[in-house]
Length: 189
Image (cartoon, rainbow, N blue to C red; front, side):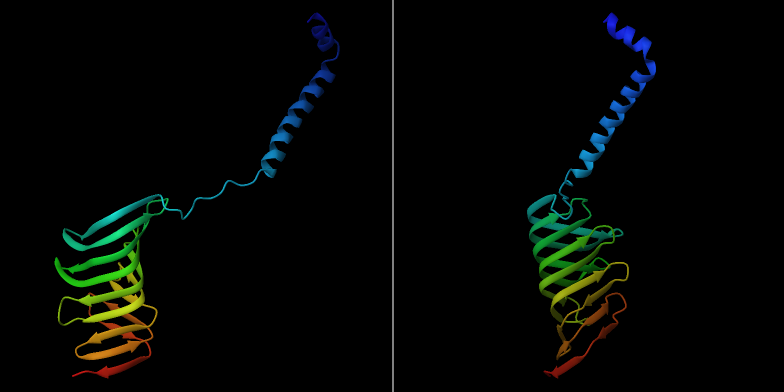
């Protein structure tokens, strides 16, 4: 031990350089190995929770806004997006009373905006006689802030004795206004 202390006392500059180079070497080793290490696989988009036999409902203010039944659901890792499979008994309420019903193979709900998309054999029909009586399509989008239902793909609509096929449809459920794309109409009265 005395030999090491004597060596350090006789050559402090050499010892300082040696320790410094060793420190830089260790840091360089860790940096290079970190750069060469493969990235950890990302888990974004994978379901965090899967549930079976789901029943859900939501409120609009103090009144019931919607409810539904689904076979199962998958929730995203951040908990903000849930996809429901085989949705049935979906009911949309206006002023606390049933207004529309919905079924679909799949419905994805964004909890941040309460917007949803439906896909696969989407069927929406009115409980109230003055509204669209029946709507069938493969894709539907609901904008909660706008209270607007959009069908970006071909849609089949039954309304007051008429059968319509349109390239797309947009309907505001509060005002009752709607816009259609290229449309063919058949009367059944």
